[in-house]
Image (cartoon, protein in one colour):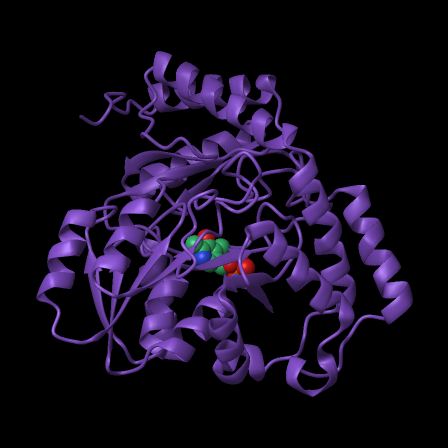
Amino acid sequence: MKDLATALDKLRQEHLFRIRNISSAAQQIEPIINGQKVLSFCSNDYLGLANHPKITAALIDGAKKYGVGTGASHLITGHHKSHHALEEELAEFIGCERTLLFSSGYMANLGVVSALANRDTTVFEDRLNHASLVDASILARAQLKRYKHLDTNELDKKLIDEKNAAKFILSDGVFSMDGTITPVTGLQALANKHDTKLIIDDAHGIGVLGKEGKGCTENQLATETILIGTLGKAFGTFGAFVAADKDTIEWCIQRARTYIYTTALPPSLADATRASLRLVRKESWRRERLQSLIMRFRTHADQVGLPITNSTTPIQPIIIGSSATALKISADLLSKGIIVSAIRPPTVAQNSARLRISFSATHTKDHVDQLIELLAEIIKSNNMSLQQDS
Ligand SMILES: *Cc1c(COP(=O)(O)O)cnc(C)c1O
């Protein structure tokens, strides 16, 4: 594989080579990474539920009752009453007619879009959408058109100019590398105006945003909007769901290939997620705590001149630009016991490599302060400009 070896070398030279760190304890604020205990600002476990004893107990109880594997897909014999109960509880939580469980958010996006769109559909996507939404349009063989990040005016113009009758708008709810929030009511108004379907993938908003943790669409979800949420982030478990009207869900059961042609999740995992849903709903202090940590970070980081963005979510990027510099800062932080990942192209646009800081309800004020202090020190000693973007 000489061609691959050359391509791999090129990635190394361009500081774009990825490595996997080895984690050897539970997911928590201070995990063990490559044998070292570190303070982490990397995970999507926003509410600190990934290692919650009640959720672990539900998983164990479920495994004792039902074993591990389902042995089949949902349409054969894999659809268990635990999956069914979770779907009903999620529908009640979101306030929609039905939900459908998928094995992951990635598979949910591929499945739903390719079940509902085809080569005669034009799909409009925010330029910063997650890779899985872009892949979903490609798999559906739809015509993909992208609009400027969050720009509903540009989207409106593109929709006016569109010749295809079948149209779709796809957007992240909270953008995974920027922490920005999609303009939900604006998108819903455009979907209505142009008779267009709208899918919002709120992987980073579910459980986190809104008083009750229903995500970026809380209290404003139109019945026609299709909402997708992952269970692997704030819920702390695994899997994903699609929330929609009953006909959309029924069509996905009939046609979503990533739903039909795959083994159903373990029932114990559905039980664990049911326990998680109860905590997400009941323990609103987790969201309040998270918000106060975000506020603290933004105020103090701004005071010491760190180039923060206008994100108000737990995703707080520090845009660096060069991949090499982002990697160097990340390595320097790690040498002092703090892990923050450097996100590089192609995950983000060229020259927009960044540190992606993410907060969890289980961080403390002291953790936030430690991060700011060290980051300011490292950026200063690297002689980086601390001027905020205008
Ligand atoms: C993480 C993420 C996904 C994928 O969800 P998984 O359940 O991890 O597969 C999909 N969309 C967005 C916006 C994400 O950030």
